[in-house]
Length: 319
Length: 319
Image 1 (cartoon, rainbow over the protein chains, first blue to last red):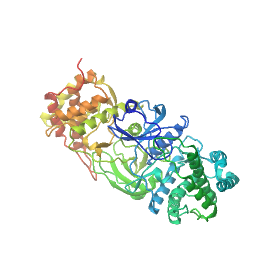
Image 2 (image 1 turned 180 degrees about the vertical axis):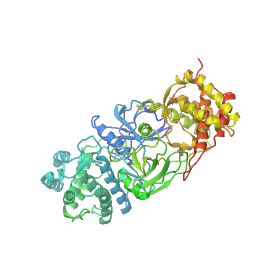
Image 3 (image 1 turned 90 degrees about the vertical axis):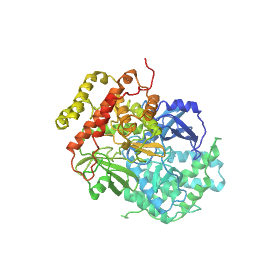
Image 4 (image 1 turned 60 degrees about the vertical axis):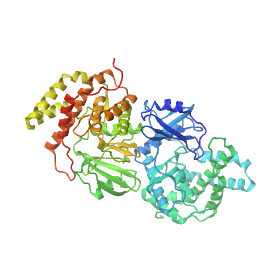
């Protein structure tokens, strides 16, 4: 996340009067990520994170906020939205939709080992299991429809090699879309990258940034995680870390035969999603105070690899 | 809290399968307090506190659990009950009503200074303000009715001096009960002693043990806090710490004229409540694995002092 809008201190002080968390002590912008404006807010009673939404419409926000509240209520270390004195999570600050959430402990681990990968595998399965009783449903904002639309917009701007790769991948994914739509589905995080997981004392202190969550195949979340957590420089899969992650996930929520059949395909869909979003972010990026745009080529290379490398099977008995 | 019931490891492991917080790593009893059985529970995903209820009926528990959830939702550092996969907070373990809550950071401060007292004053006011939008209502389990009933039971067992003091105090409190019932009321914690407040990095990391909460005069909570946090050895009030606590509370929720008039009386009612409960605990205490019974004489002496000493007024303009 980045900082595009800076509320003034007086406005924030007045806004906090609608909450029961004491008075403003200090706030500072957070330079991390590619969306929204985020601030650490310290009050006389505690530490919170303030988010001003730049791109997400007010109508879509309740899905994310109530999902976070639901998961926190089930004991998972996710940011819990803070209700104001009117019992509402969502407010308005500096003209933008705004929310306060609990600030979680820890810092991200850029070089995870197999131990980290086992823990994130277990955590991801627990998020998926707890999400089963979440009552709201909203499509994955970076799901198959978005991928097809975005590819159409971006294809003319790509070099010939990349355009050909994209075209071939879209045709392939379209050919298996019926199988994909029959996989076990539910609320997925959508973006469980290393920088969205905080570690404290060897535990996961927080899984943050649920603003790409949505209803989709649970396996897509697993594939997104493996593509980020279990790769070697250059993007090839690291069998040891992948095995640790998938075995831990499988022991909480066993994979189905359909998921085993679709695993290589889903790794490709997950790579495609980030190649497209990063390419779009670079093409469309605005100027903010603190903006971070990630390299799209990394995910083009991962997609190319996944389409050609032999992928080890998911855990669980073949039938 | 103490430990009367010890669940076996296998039963706890199976019970945790109803939650989405991973698998049991370890658990240990907590030796602190006078009610229920409490355990630190560590799972592969995090750290929690398990409570088995020994004395509180299943019908009364939802008030406490939903109050904690409500306050946590408003950003206050209180234990958040964890919902199981059926979305329920309350379960059964070892034949007892049982609940898991989040484990909060920090440790209690037995020797608070004026800085601590200002922070607890501000926190208490914030708890009271956030409690305004809590929809459930249940009487204070140690309110005026309980105090009168318990006094009747205990009076024959007391030494003559103590019995006379108790009799005089009951008559006095009865004479002002109409005024007391008109004070601003809401959900009070009921037991915000030093050992129920955890400090971490100079912040209040947690206010715990809401199982004496109930609907009563908010000022009673303030008086209970002052009687524990702002006293010198022997029980006399420390004006500096009391001023810090009351000024901080007043800046969040201003005291009313009615509260100013009833302040000395409320300090006496608060002292009476703990003299009675500690006397009853000593008289009726059972044998547990880890039982802590606090000294009742401390609160008899505080009551005697409050009935005779000059109490500084609450902050705020006289009218």
